[in-house]
Length: 193
Image (cartoon, rainbow, N blue to C red; front, side, top):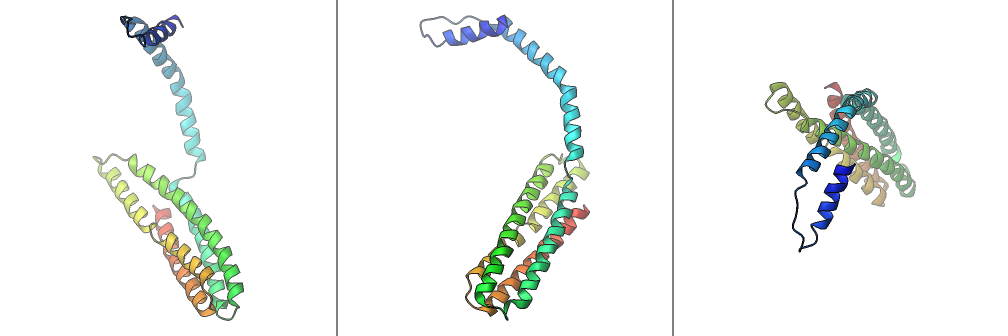
């Protein structure tokens, strides 16, 4: 548009120190009006897109429920490894621990995504409103519950990979199961809210 070209030319010419600046207020106002019209035209489409995304995106509670199920499956699998670890060869335990560690790392990434969603939801709350303030507090509690179990389970499985004795590996698997149980309980509680 001519208004945009005039403003652009003026801004480029202001780089010349000998040139005296001239006002482009009218042109800037014309551009502002055009931008405002564009925003108003796009607003209904953007709101509709937001609503569709909100319908398609899983809710925090649904995502937590899905992760709860995944954690339960991983915990059960780790418990099976714990049951046979003392009777197995350390190398076999190491291979099983590596598989469990990879699965735990994937789960931990998903838990981090859940934590990001919880933080984002908490940041949208109006602390002046009682209900929303409670929701923000619940988010803080949820984040606290999710803080330690994932890395602790991962560390225990890393120890199972590192240890050279079957008995120590069995203890590492037991520690991982314990932490996975804590994570499962936290996710279950989050899913209920």
